[in-house]
Amino acid sequence: MPHKILKAPTLVAFESSSSMTIEWKEPPNNGGFSVLHYKLYVNNAVLDGLVAATEKTYLMTSLILGTSYKIQISSVNEVGESAKSDAYTILFSKCALSSGKFDTCLSC
Image (tube, rainbow, N blue to C red; front, side, top):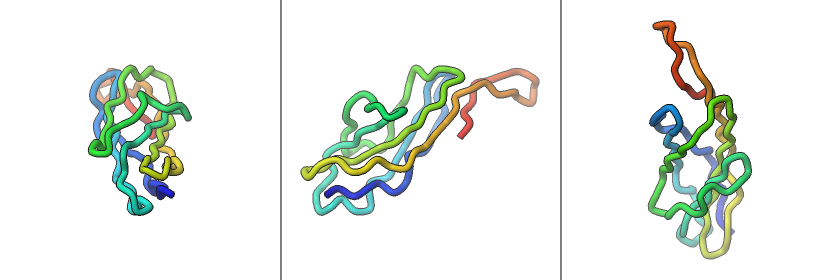
């Protein structure tokens, strides 16, 4: 049985007004079988299918202001899919800057 990824994915970089990059670590125990790929879940739905085992980052695009995103990941090996990771939840919103202007930001 694949082992649960213990840590939730994390935000790496805020790329633009509608995208961000998330990253994750390989599970500490793969159940004796190499990870074949990862599944990303956003608000409990699988996002864009499978991510190659060699990848540890993903660019999320088309984010919508005022929307909350719950991000989880699982690993898949020959035996099957692991449990989902703990959730990383963000609220994509507008934030006031010190200049008095507003910019896009994430609240975790």
